[in-house]
Image (cartoon, rainbow, N blue to C red):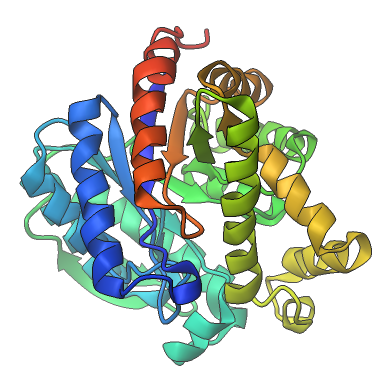
Length: 357
């Protein structure tokens, strides 16, 4: 299996200065390659403490110059917030800087604060994402960008530097709603799974996604990439306590950033699925939903962490796991110990797992 890490730059509760967050997150990012991780990923968000990485490609370009072999992925670049030609150029540059180590991850965004901050209409995001993604895939494969879509109009231009090798098999998108999953299949994109709903639902959606992917593209869909908020410790009870506190903190930051206590998602075009999610929170209560989210993540002793990753793999056929170690204002010494223990005890076992036939 492929084992990567994700860097969030979160300043939950403003417990540190933003400079302290960056200094520590970059220090941890520098450990990824020496510890043997296969990739490092960045997450785009704006305007709040939720994730302070407004330019993922800038971060990945920085890491490209500090590393030699590790792959560099975006989790994700939110296409409706950008000119897709500029994104194609930036990914091509990143691939040249890194010697072909870039992995493209894109999404359509959910935070009202971010759409409003950019003066964009959330109701247009599904169309903007589909048109931008189609043009981005073409631009990275052919070195030429153009579009005559409903919202994205682009005369034919060359991407320079010209992509020097194919990005096929290196382009993924995050999907939560069933509609988004099917759209990814039609666009020929791999799927990035961030656990937040029952695995049985994910399995059903992957089945439909794979069927459409095969029909449209004439080949099997790539295995999904799975993300997990991860805490690894020798003591099971200590791991449980730490995960409950800091994954719990991260859940609270999700609730705040995406305003899940508000009703606006129920009436926003293209976000009806998330409106139903809001209803579930109202029905079951925030603590029960938080506990459910906690149970989806990867925490425990090294043996338990390994078993959780493998359990997910057996259910959805994933061949890659991305561990997010730093979140929810967890002390950085604890983050580093968890990251090192996972690398020493769990990662070697995962890397021995053969690819599914």
